[in-house]
Length: 91
Image 1 (spheres, rainbow, N blue to C red):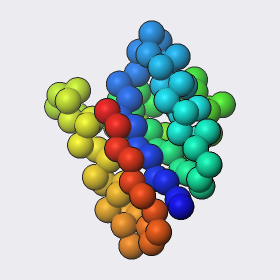
Image 2 (cartoon, rainbow, N blue to C red):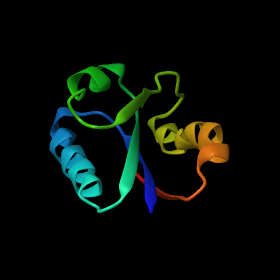
Image 3 (cartoon, helix red, strand yellow):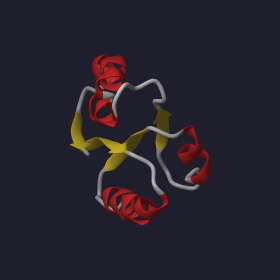
C-alpha cells in the first residue's frame, strides 16, 4: 500500500512540535508514503527542511482559511499518477 498525506500547516513556532509529531507518525506506518505540506510561510520550508516532506508555500491568499483548500492544486497535478495510492488529508 502507498499513502499520500497532505497537511495544511499555518506556520507558527508553537506548532512546529505538533507538525513534527504528525509527520513522524505518518512515516512510522509500514507503507510507502509521501507527505506534502501546504503552508502560508515560505520561511517554514527553510526552517523545517530537515523533515522528510515536500513543502508548498502559498502567500497570495485573501484569508488564512484558504490554506485548507490549497491541497486541491497539488492533487490535481498528481491524480493521473496516483494508481494504488491512498490519500490522507489533514488540517
